[in-house]
Length: 433
Ligand SMILES: C[S@@+](CC[C@H](N)C(=O)[O-])C[C@H]1O[C@@H](n2cnc3c(N)ncnc32)[C@H](O)[C@@H]1O
Image 1 (cartoon, rainbow, N blue to C red):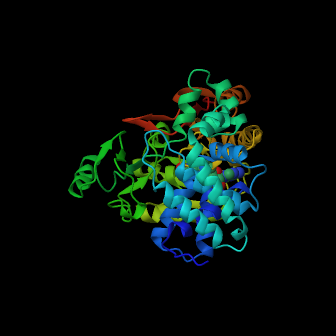
Image 2 (cartoon, rainbow, N blue to C red; image 1 turned 90 degrees about the vertical axis):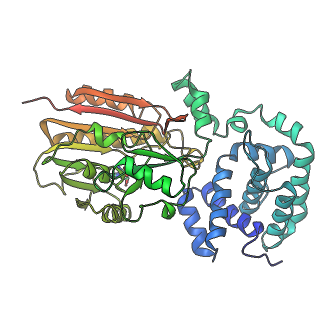
């Protein structure tokens, strides 16, 4: 059976393919890029595929439990299982949220999607029967699966346990915040426009927005990046409010020599350059991501020396010490799951331990490159203490670093004017010689 490229069935197949790639271990942005490269989806269809796959990532725990309850074994092949996950996601009602499609349209289109694929056509009756059974018996089925924490919270059990152990008071709010679609927060480039003038520009374009930090503006309604006024000319960047604290905390002054050691894609690099006239070296070990630093700085009309290299080695270093070092080290990204809902399904319990160990190696090396009385800012977008507070405390013990005032662990917040991701900040000063 042929399906039209503007139909929900087409979007369901695309989303199912993306979800299948994620469940095999690919991050969702890359999974979507693969799907878009394989299909000639229109911009509208791409938007729908992206929306359905992000929604599904926020519901995998629940829809997997429902499928387990309604079938004797997980539907095969993997694409069929993912199609069922996507279709169920669209008909499971979420508290306080409007369903994106009518139930009967989802069922009809999911059956068409199965019928359009030679790998799934045999199962179109089963797709129909399971989705209809869910609609008939949803109250009882949901009451049964909600007894399982993974279905109730939509996170793997180990993640829930780890969050509860680390934050006995806040774990529920943290898990809940990770299931909300993120806001669109912008950083105003003060070299091009003031926050007041940018807010006036948004008002002219009838886009409601609120200032939620010194340079942070949150749009009331997220829009595609290219529709953000002034984005292409570098007036603003997309950056969460908590991430905007980094550049200010590092306390950069004109004329300083600064290293941004894990810089790609250059979000914080750009902010440092917006704040002061500094001699900045932006380093990252991933050559593909380094290209994005070039693109971002070109858009912002800012300049840094950009190098590809390992912050744990010195082969890229000219031997001149730095006044300031930003170490935004690779981490589990457990503090930004609302932006990346796939992360919880991709990570494994031991990842935080391994990442903390490799970041400690980077920090030890970077410390050698810092001037006496210079400052190093450790940043992670994690909520796991192993990667954040425990890492900072161990660093002080190893190096006798002076710990200066910085926010420490910021837990993700959903609260209006204080809406941000979960980040960790520790600021260290090197003792004078
Ligand atoms: C959290 S991201 C940085 C985000 C960036 N600071 C920003 O604000 O846009 C961590 C970065 O560390 C890089 N990275 C990982 N291992 C590295 C290493 N050994 N040396 C330098 N960069 C590394 C990754 O490629 C990734 O781009």
